[in-house]
Length: 134
Image 1 (cartoon, rainbow, N blue to C red):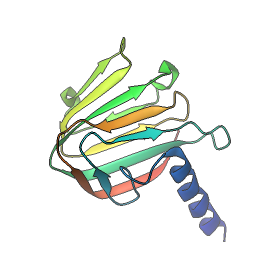
Image 2 (cartoon, rainbow, N blue to C red):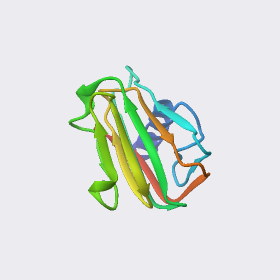
Image 3 (cartoon, one colour):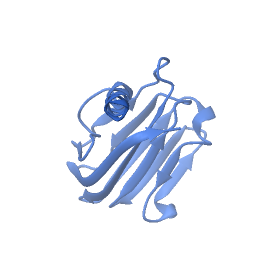
Image 4 (cartoon, rainbow, N blue to C red):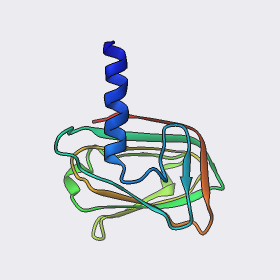
């Protein structure tokens, strides 16, 4: 019973953090060209969320913007090669360039985050997973 309750709370908190069902989901990512997903701050749960996808087709470029730099210490962006991720602190934006896989953790602090497919193509991710983060 505890495990079922824990799984239910995890699922609900992930849905609350994500403003739409497009983009990230538990097992697949689907982003239309230039589609944005906003990862909201939820005062009630105070929990981060993590998304990972091992296969992005075609290779994708994403823009990640933020408003509060306090979350940067715990923000996690893992791609095949660290040089694929650039950060402009003045504009509060990351560009994640030409990735075929991506793991990204949004901490609770520092939200909202806006994650946008800036590729001119529909991106489909398979072999994906979702979970709680810091």
